[in-house]
Every structure is written in C-alpha cells, then in structure tokens.
Image (cartoon, rainbow, N blue to C red; front, side):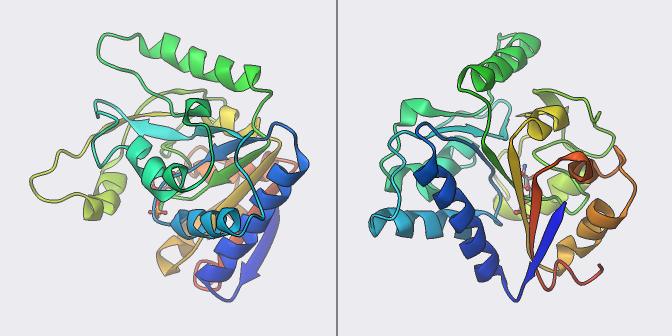
Length: 242
Ligand code: GLP
C-alpha cells in the first residue's frame, strides 16, 4: 500500500486525475472503476477540465461503478446513475452505453444480477484502475463492516452510521434507500490498480484503521493492504491520525 499525503483536497483530486489521465492515454480500451460520494467530485471536475483542454478523451473508455441504491429509478436525482451523468458523463465524450452500474430492478434475481455484473467486468477485460472513497466506518463501495473479504457483487443493507452520514444529501421528504447493490471486496481487489481518495478530519480514524490496523472485515478498506497496487491519496486532515 502506497500512502501519499498532500496539503489539501485539491491536490488529492489533481493527483488522482493524473493517474486516470495516464491510464486512458496509454491503454487502447481502458476500463475504469468509478465511485460516488462527495470526495471524487473534484476528481471528476479535474477530468472534465482535462477533456475540455483536449488532454484526454473518454471515447474508448468503459466504466463500472462500485454501487447503486436499490429500488431507485435511474432518473431519480439521488441515483448514482444521475450522479455520474451530472458530474462526469454529460460533460465528456464517453459512450454512455459503455457505462455500467450494478442494478437489480424489482422482480430480478439479485444473485443472477450480481453474477452478470461480475461477468460484464470480466468480458471488458477487468478493471484497470478502481477509484475509491472511504466511509467514516471504513466501508468501500457499500461493503459495510463485517462484509466478507471474499465478497462479490451483491445486495447489502446499509448501516445506521452510513445512513446518518449520507442523510445530509437527502431532503426531509425524500426517500433514502437502506439497501444497495455493491461490488464486493474481492471484486475491488481484482482491479489492477486501486486508487483510494480520502479527505477531511472525519475520515482520519477510518484511514488509520485501513493503513495501520489489522486486515479485518470490521474495516473493509483494510483489505487493500493485500493489494499489490493500492495507492492511497490523503490530505493532511485525513492523515492526521497516522
Ligand atoms: C458512500 C459510497 C462510497 C463512498 C462513501 C464516502 O457511502 N457508497 O463509495 O466512498 O459514501 O462518501 P463521501 O466521499 O461523501 O464521504
């Protein structure tokens, strides 16, 4: 695990954008793993800028998102599909038919849907670079504490802490989903490179557990200690307990 500490969140985003740009300029058919949450927004802004200045093109890029809420329509402003469209896809030259999120509509078999998502990743050639954030409880994707380190794409129930953390994004009369479809920890570990971004004091404890704690299902992000090419980009506040 390579840990790099920057002065501020903007530098974290700029560094992450460099990693992504290098991959998509180097590979003929790059496969990116994407994340939602407030942390990667500045990364997506930096990538849009690089696209506008013709440093990069997403024309041949295929993407797989980590997770999506269950029981939410893709046109709902709270869906992660909407998040990806508005923060990245609508502003670059990506072919949206090559952008995927794990979903399971009513009546579909969750296990079959999970297996199908894993299969699509495989057929695309595997994920070259997976972007990750981290939950205050150490979750990655929606792999909450106690998730199996061998887990694959499936449905997870969100913990109270995650629901509380994310409630800031929902207005009082808006439905906040309590279930999500998420890549598993083993799915994430299959990526050739993993790039985790963490900023702000509220992530310091989770970062400490991930980097210096035991590898444990109680801190899902600690599984990255077992990855050969895991890069952790932190600002000073997120690194303050290391
Ligand atoms: C959500 C997402 C995670 C993300 C985490 C942290 O629960 N499923 O992928 O890393 O929140 O989000 P934020 O960056 O907003 O702190």
